[in-house]
Amino acid sequence: MQLVLGDENEVYELASLKIKETENKYIKKGINDLSEKEKKIKAKSLVLVYKKTNRVILELNMIQNQHYYPLSILDYARIMKKYMKKEIPSLPIMSLDSHDYNFCDFNCKDCLAIDTRQWAQKNLGYTTYDIETYEKTLKEISRYSQKRGLDSVRFEMSGEGNPDMYPHRARIIEYAATKCNMKCVYVSSGSMLDEKTIDALCKYAYYIRISLPGINNESYSLYSNQVSDNKFTYDDAMNLIEKLVKKRKEYNREDKLMIGARACMRPENEGYYIKTAKKLGEIGADSFQIVKILIPLGDKIEKYRIPQETVDELTHLHKNYEDYGLMHIQTPHKLDYMYYHRELEDLTKPSQCYSSLVSPILYGPNLVICTHWEKIKDINNSHYGKMRGNINELEDIMHNEHANYIRNIVPKNCSSCCSIFDNQVLEMIKAQLVLVDDLDDVEFYLTY
Ligand code: SF4
Ligand code: SF4
Image 1 (tube, rainbow, N blue to C red):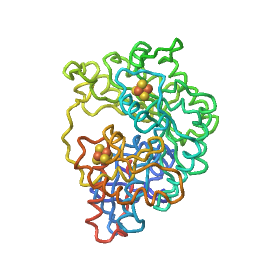
Image 2 (image 1 turned 90 degrees about the horizontal axis):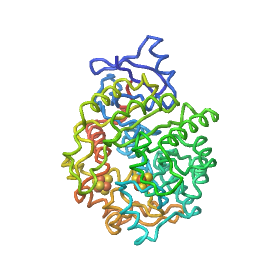
Image 3 (image 1 turned 90 degrees about the vertical axis):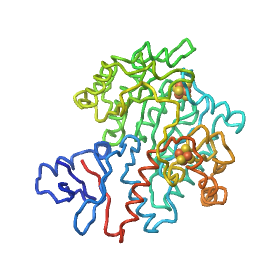
Image 4 (image 1 turned 135 degrees about the horizontal axis):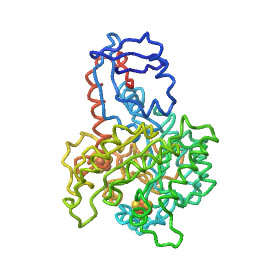
């Protein structure tokens, strides 16, 4: 049975494209007992309901809960509706991906950041981000978005190096959370996390995702390619996740803070996906992402067909992840090859790049249209400008002639897109709203 959760925690049953409030108290309790985190992560689809008749006029199933967390597709849909109703002058920055540190302790074999990292050091003079400008910039971004109907911007720290090594990490997390009401997301190997940062993360962050270069000690060592004598291992990463989980409990934030791990598909990981999922579940982590990355340069994808045993292992995991104690799993959609082809995927381009409005990147102090390496290196056609953190500067930076110019030439000039899915989803939402006569007659909800 498909259920829909209303804004006042009322629960509806969805059948034959209509919603009807349920009388069943067990069903109501089941949904309302979900934690704040579970309500976002366990959602199955987004629906648009015509309020007068309770008829569902749109359902989107690919809603990528983990990708948007701690926001959800519902936040994006409702902001789009506000924009279409002209309640806000333009879309807010909903998610900011900040690349604030430009060195790494690992030398991963197929690191995609090396090229842009070296380019940025040479061409932007950017290696790290001074903390005073950084804080002012976050304040300005949150002001800009609040004015456009979003109280809390998703603030992801990941990047061109190891974010653990940024010297002011604990301070910027606390500042973003307490002074800007941002929702912090942290992505790193965790190899250089200090106690102060662990504490700040567990107290303020909403999602910590530890990247695993391999999912056993051998493949971790092979792919992280560390040169120091004191190498960080797969076991160390698992111990770190366990420590984060314990600290989260101390701060009583189990209902909000999601802790997970991500691993890329590798030949050496075969046979270890279920073992890692089980281990993660046992130590209290919530999620496990298994993803494909681009085939290493010069290599041939045909060499890396996924063996049947691994297809079986991942299919089993996808169906039974809850039995291993996990709240969420992500496995690749197509279980054909272990990597993505380097040839461009010829997907239909959206008419507009929404992503450049709602999720630009902060590349040091530079506000850039998206994370695609071609864009990072194309200052004239992809950089909005350098942020100084002055109040109201975004009204100009995001809407001046240059900003309009760079947004006008995408996506038609983009050779591929790192946010194709986000763009397509927002386009679908907008296209449906255009068809509605009176936007006050419809509302978006999540289903379970
Ligand atoms: S941890 Fe990330 S940034 Fe560092 S070398 Fe590996 S892939 Fe590159
Ligand atoms: S690649 Fe182009 S269309 Fe895709 S997010 Fe970047 S600017 Fe937008």
